[in-house]
Image (cartoon, rainbow, N blue to C red; front, side, top):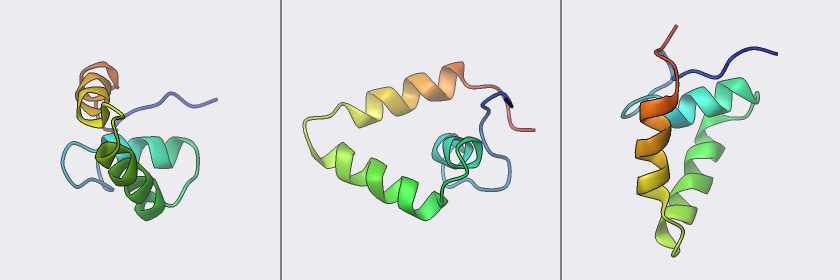
Length: 60
């Protein structure tokens, strides 16, 4: 299984959602939409995004 890392090509801000979408072979637009919907709920999406940004590997 390949390691998870931020996306170098499929990025809007830091490449976190693009990297997750690449890792799981998801459509990045749908992954961003799901994250956006979760961020509007009491889900602490911004905090999770920042934590993932810090722990995910650099773009390849």
